[in-house]
Amino acid sequence: EAKPKGHYHEIPFKFYKLHETLAEFPELAVDTVRSWFDGNGAIFQYRGANLLHIIFPDWAEAFGAKLLELVRTGESQNIKFVLHVLQNYEGETFLHRICREIVSVLPENHDLLTHVSMVLQSPGVVMGEFGLAEAYEVKIVEIRPWLDDENEKVRNFTANYVAGLENEAKSERRRAEEELELRKHAYGVREEDADGEGEASEQLESEKQDGGEDQ
Image (cartoon, rainbow, N blue to C red; front, top):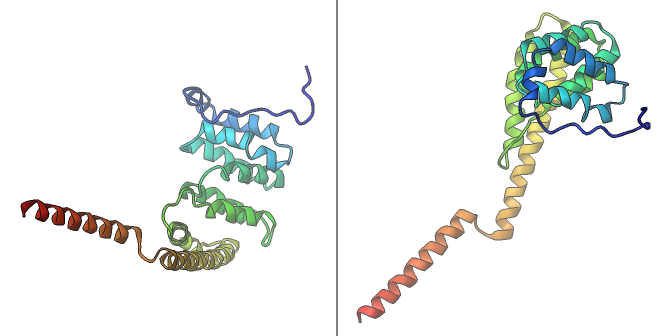
């Protein structure tokens, strides 16, 4: 029975054991999900692409090799598909090989290079006021070897990417510093200082009561 157009197919958040079986057939898994891709990335990102992330949560060499094979076709739709898959990961360094290949295959200034930057820049979970700035700074260090790549397109992409990320990191640091200053003005003292003062007051009050009882 044909399903109505736009029918919603729910993708599970994760598999308990099934992904282990599916992961044994990376080429079949990628080819199957690739056949679902119609160019609508907004929907596919959270359906087919996310399904591959659930099957390969920790990546796999054969899975990466299959995606690399699609990139090397040079076909725009294949590269779009791969980028949507990569966006479900958190910019880990194991994505660098495929991202570098995409940069080397695409013409300079191609629209899809923006998506490559998004994949590489994804920080994942960060903590603390300066967490995002620090994550960006780490990513700059990780990508710097590309500045010496033999491929000029890769070098040019990296120079622009690093410059942009440096600006983002500086902006995030300024934002975090401003928020800390505003918090100091709003609350007067830091929470740990306030806790310390509270404990000191309680101790002083207790000593006063003990002194009164002794008298």
